[in-house]
Image (tube, rainbow over all chains, first blue to last red; front, side, top):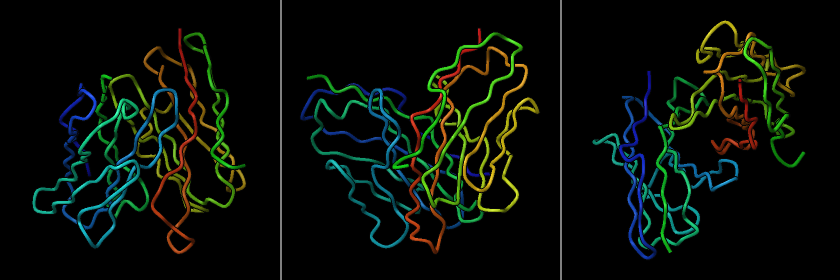
Length: 114
Length: 117
């Protein structure tokens, strides 16, 4: 069965600091990869996704993620965070055999101090 | 509707009671999912409906949990004889299907927060 690991449960940063959230998955076949974000009091929404092609994916709000197949990783990055990036971030994988079912990681709570 | 709609938004119940949670997906979306979000536990897959196919129930934690989807649209998640460990936010999501403008994105509702006393 596929699984997704997010190694950081909580991250605290100051504004303008750089952010990198780790995500590793376990599945040997073709995968689709996603990052979702949940802002305080809001529903989950898509930040970015990777299906194929350029392994460096750019999403909304200045976020990007890099798919490294050899490391089974899909880390999320942002060069300079803002207070409004305070949220919980979830990595998710959709393996081909599982159809559209997404398996989520445990989430990382990010707090950006003004 | 414009988005995924869930009701009730909050439900407080006593241990042992049955509860029903409702999800109305985005019109035209053939896939519907239920997830459970517990404090510090991330999102736990419960069940997945795709069109007229048999649902994937592999994530249901016990036989107290069941879900149905009527007419390929609205879904109801039922929890019988609720226990305190059932307390969580139950999230519903929907998506399109490959070949129908599929983007791979799941659209989530606001969730139903269940508290079992």
